[in-house]
Length: 443
Image 1: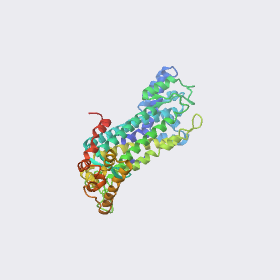
Image 2 (image 1 turned 30 degrees about the horizontal axis):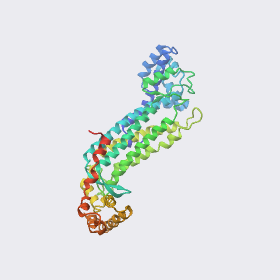
Image 3 (image 1 turned 90 degrees about the vertical axis):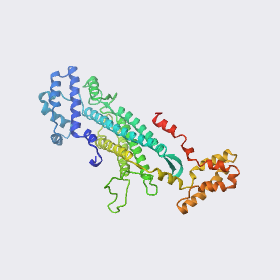
Image 4 (image 1 turned 60 degrees about the horizontal axis):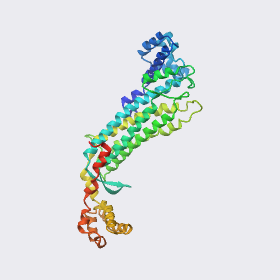
């Protein structure tokens, strides 16, 4: 993970110290269950908690042991034995390494997801607040980057809110799917450990139970989890890209907050660049990088191999750390986004009312004209407005209206009053309340 793009709350989950503490808790809870079953003395389970629970695990020492034994779990158990003494022989009875590693990964991913949900909630709150603020701020909608019909900036943000809300729902489902425990022994058959141990550890660690774990938790769960993170990252990029486009000099309908003392370029003092949303675009790519390797991890030899292990040591922390950072960065961008309603209106009007072309097409068909000929009537006037815009940079307010009023074929079907009435921009806004009710409810 890159420290520049990491929040300490998330990195703490993936620290070596946190990992070893979880390893210990899984082993100790397992010993409690084994003691209840009479497999090991209860005094041993109590001693393991007393001595191991207060231990400060020495990461450097464990690493030193691992360099000799070439096995991370054995290195930890060897280090743990130095605290516990003779009762250490009762630790890890009937367990296999993957029982510890996979269950720990489940705990870490579940805890990481809880932090991601906090970030999602902050983004959703920011989107809702700004959407309500700009519910009726009219702006031009664009398809293919070209002026289409009016919308409101609030509707834009409401659309992003709905998208992120779907992402939140998917993330909750992904958490449920990944938060499972496997304490089933060397090949997953419970030959040397009672299933009650697994149930006890799962309850204590706040996990569900993997019904058939072979030697590992099946990796389709992990693939679905990382795919969900990838979709959320793509939604972040979707919002970021819209802001980047709106901040372009020729558009400038909204821009990232530019703080006092901030500098945009080492060479050009005038620059105000969309650096935060560009950064979000890059972070989204980093999160999505995990998706294909996670999919490829689903296929393993027989009951297991370790081809997935090295991948997950990277993508687990990297994806959650980067997405966590991106969510909070996005929330900050939205909270502080500078919006220019007057520029939105001015940009919309530069094409002289062309955004009403569909209204005229429909009106002409309702007046008795065939659709193809109605289309030609509207388009021939619209293309003249485009030419004015191309040559002058601004078609001029009312250019489309003027041409339609002078077109004898149009006037044969529509009165001047009818034509003028169709330049009411409120027509495009009449169902904004319905959209907001669908997204935010009727409050």
